[in-house]
Length: 173
Ligand code: NI
Image (cartoon, rainbow, N blue to C red; front, side, top):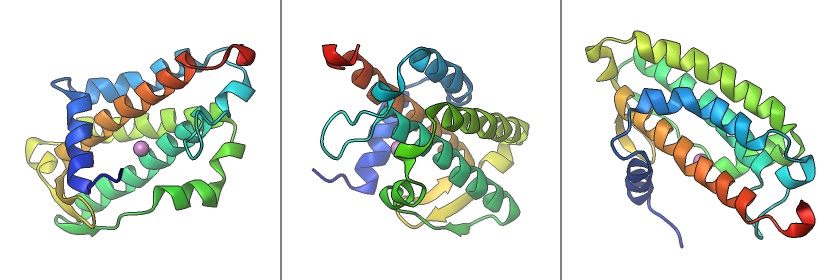
C-alpha cells in the first residue's frame, strides 16, 4: 500500500486531532525517554517485521526529521515562498545507518534540536507563522502547518514505538 503525499498529510493531521501542536512537540522527547528507559538495546534495535524500522531507527529518523524541518523553517523565514526539497527518508536511513546509532544519542539530539526549534517557533509573530515554503511533495506549507505536521508526526511514531514495545515477544523480555 503506497500512500500519496496528500493522504499522508491527512493521516498525520488525524493523529494530531485538535491538540495544540507546540505542547505536543514539547512533551514528546521526555515521553519517549520514559518509554525506552530500561529497555534493553536488543529490543530497541529489533525490527518488528520485515522492512519495518526498529525503535532505534525511528528515534534516529525523528532526530534527522527535526534537523531537516529546522533548516526549512529557517529558510522560509529567510525567504518567504522558498522551494523546499523533499528527501528520501529510507536513503537517509541508509546513509547514516540508523540501526548502528545509539538510541540514547538519537533521543538526545532530537531533544536538543526540538528545544531550539520550539524556542524559534514560540517567538514568531502570527504573520511570520503564515510565511510558507513550496514543498516538492506536499505543496504550499506555512510555518504553522509545519508545526502541526511535526506534532502529528511525533504522535504517529510514538504510537509505532508503543506497538513495538507492546508486541515484543516473550523471549525479548
Ligand atoms: Ni516519519
